[in-house]
Structure formats: C-alpha cells, structure tokens
Length: 69
View 1 (cartoon, rainbow, N blue to C red):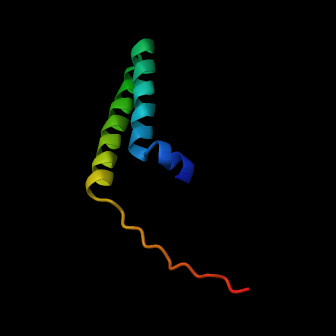
View 2: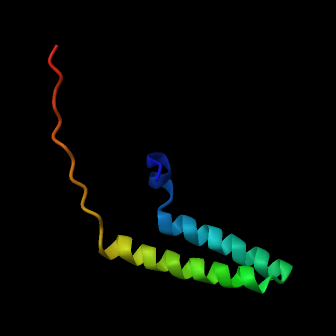
View 3: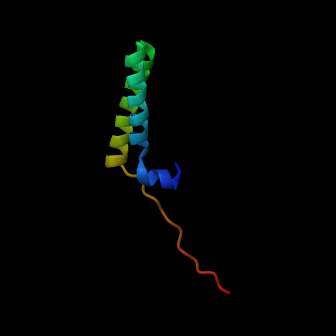
C-alpha cells in the first residue's frame, strides 16, 4: 500500500468504505448479487481489521549506514 494512503486510510477502512458504497448502489438498483458481494467485503474488512488490531506485523528495519564522503 502506498505510504501516503496508509497514513490516511488503513486497508480495512478502505475495503469497508468501498463495500458500503457497493451496498448503497445495490440497495438503490435492487441488485441482490452486488449486495451479497458487499456483505462479503464487509466481513473481509472486519477480519482484516481484527488481524491488524490484535496481530500487528513486526517490521524489522535495517540499521542506518551513514555514507562516507
């Protein structure tokens, strides 16, 4: 994920937002298949949120090496 976007919106929030928009369109256009896809995406976003919240990824940074002139 882009670093700039990661500061504003996490993966789970982005998936939830897109699923919410899909659910609105599905309700407005009476498209049951799209509604089920959006419900699945909401479930997936919730699972991703729980994973990110309770099982964070440990990032190992390489030591900074100063450049010699």
